[in-house]
Amino acid sequence: MAEAIRRRWGHFRRQPVFTGFCLFMAVLALNIIIQTPAKFFTVSNFRILLSKNMPLILTCLGQSVLMMCGVLDLSTGIQLAFVNVIAIMLPQELGVPVGLGWACALTGGVLISLFCGFCIVKLRLPALLTTFSITYIIKGVNVLIMGEPQGKVEKIIYKTYDSVLFGFLPFAALILLAVLLIWQYIKRTRYGRHMYAVGNNPRNAYAVGINPERVQMKAFLIKGFIVGLAGLCLTASNASGNPLQAEEYGIRSLSACMLGGMNFGGWGTLSCGLFGAGFLVIVQNAVYYLFNFLTKAIQGLMINSYWQNLVSDTIIFLGLLATIITAKAQRETLKQGFVKQLKRGEKYGG
Image (tube, rainbow, N blue to C red; front, side):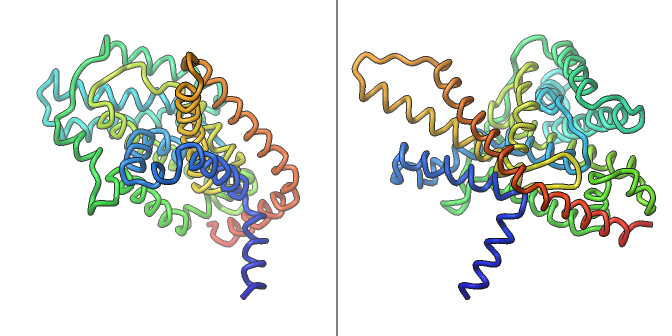
C-alpha cells in the first residue's frame, strides 16, 4: 500500500499540474490561518468565493484550452464585457426575452472567439499582437453599444446564481462542474488527443494526417463557449452592465495558467488553469483578510487598496518564479511528454 502511494506521488510530482497544486495548497493554508478555520470552512464563505470569482476561473479554463494547442488570446477579458453588454442591452433596448438575449450574448462571445482564431490560425497573424489589438476593437464596440454602466438583471437570476443548493452546494459550483465534465469528455475523444499533438508540433501532427488549423479553430470555439459562460456569470454576479470591466482578465488568465504549470503546446490540462485561478483567488482573499486584521490590531493604521494590490501581486510574482524553477527541474519530463503526445497523434491521426 505504501509503495503504491509512493509511486502515485512520484508520478504526480512529474505532472505539470504539480506546481500549481503546491502553490494553491500553500496559499490555501495561509488563508485558513489568517481567516481562521471557523470562518473559512463555512457555506457562506465558499458561496462568496465561487460566485464572485467564477468569471475569472472560467476565463482561466478557456485560456488553458488554447495554450494546449500552442496559442493564446489576450482579449478574453474584454470578451466577458462584450457578453455582459449584449446580455443587458438586448432585453433593455430591444425588448428581447431575457433567455433569448443571454443566448445571443453567449453566441456573440463564441463568434468573437472564432474571429480571433481566424486571424491567428487562418491569416497566421501573431497571436499576442493580434489579440492585444482586438482588445481595443471590442472595447470600442462595447462603448458604442453601451455608453456607460447601466441596466439591471432580474432578481430571480442573480438570486439563483448567488444561491446555495441542498444547504451546502453553491449554484456557481454547478457551472464549474459542468464545464469540467464537458472537458473530461472532450479530452477522451480523438480531438482531445489531437490537441496535444498539434500543440506539441503542428508540422509533425500534419505529417500524420491531423489538420492543425481545424484543431486550433475548434479550440477557439471551445474557449469562446467557456468565456461566454464566464460573461453570463459576470452579468449575474454584478446584476448590471459595464462595457469596460474585466479587461485585465486576459493577462491574469495567462498568469494563472502559468502558475498552474501550463506550458505552450502539448503540455498541461485544465487542472493547471483551475489551480492557477485558485491561487490568484485565494491570494487576494488572504491579503484582504490580513489587512483587515492589521487595521483592527494596530490603532490608527490606514491601508488603501494599492497596498493590498502590491502585496498580492508580489506573492503572485514569487509564485511565477517558483513555476520557472520547477519547469527547469521538469524539463526532461516535458520532452518525454512531447514525444509521448506525438506518438498518440500518430496513433489516432488520419
